[in-house]
Image (cartoon, rainbow, N blue to C red; front, top):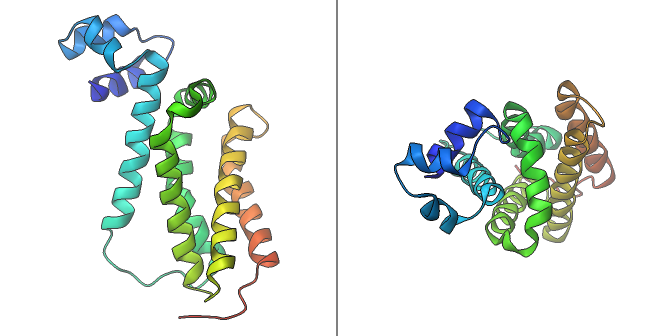
Length: 184
């Protein structure tokens, strides 16, 4: 059912897709769709699946030489997620609004956020043996990522600036939290 919702959201937009349409295309009743949740909840679930797929793909990639630059390594962690939001701009804006309204019902998203932090921590530890610093940078990176996404979503800057602004923030963090012990 989520695949049908994702397809219809992509074809008709969030506002142009109805629960009835999702039910019809999925071959189920409206009640069956509503048992999962309202349209906002379905959108959150669709994005949760997309985010989980990006994490899964990153975990399945064959080992390659990591970037030689910490900024590049941290940009590589968040880059695929930024691309996913940019590719789905109108839906991403509705998703952000749905998250705000969802409150504590986004446990899955918290787990996905924890995975992003773990990936950033692992990238940081390729350049430093300081686990406490790696945790701090990973947490900061996650909050910078969220802040940039929300600023982009409300139109503070355009699509073409999202990656550039994120990279600039990461460069600043790397400069401030320069790893003291290099590991290779």
